[in-house]
Image (cartoon, rainbow, N blue to C red):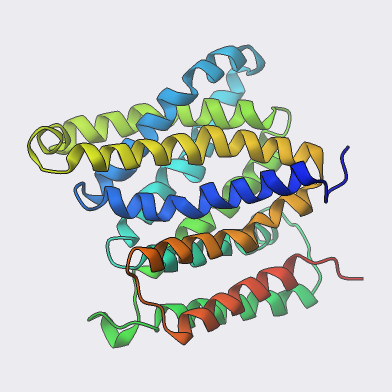
Length: 294
């Protein structure tokens, strides 16, 4: 195992932060033409197509009991969050979406305690509460006509992060006998047909693609999102975990919001001091909740 501060491991960490931090601005660009459901379904369908060769190579590793579990994992970890994120980003800035996404580690802890009887030190509750306070600050930082100044659409991302946390625990306790690349590739391939059915049966996606100006550019942004945030990023993350430690790899959580905020500012999004206060509280809370308590 390499030293966790080796040049290669740090480069991989920064690349991961860049890829995942950029995903929110790519989603925003796709939403300029396509509806939230179309973006989500297209993302799932393209990701499944990209990962299909890998899934075929690894299909011999799974048993019949794995199929339904992998399908459920795909729903919780990819399909449902994709719809929630794209729906939220029609009403909130991509930079804010990127910051809220850092709640995922906290939801992993909460879901583990709620459904899988995992215990974590009481002191970690302080970190969770601080992060939740930061979430509230972010969601009231901009009114935009929302009820009482509270941007309810931010709650969609909070729920998406809860699904991420639930899925990670589900994988740990129900599909632990499979490798991470096998789980990722096959679960995404299994939910890809749902995206295709939604896209071609319930939307006018093809008409938009052919007739709406800028549609092909938007399609390209979504395709890049599906490629980089699934196949490439997952492969790099697994390599980083093997080279170093899960704790070091998870530190991408603290860098990624800087990337998403940076892209948002470049794209003309305006952040107030309250956004930075909220981001600081969320990241500080995540750090406190995930540190090792004696």
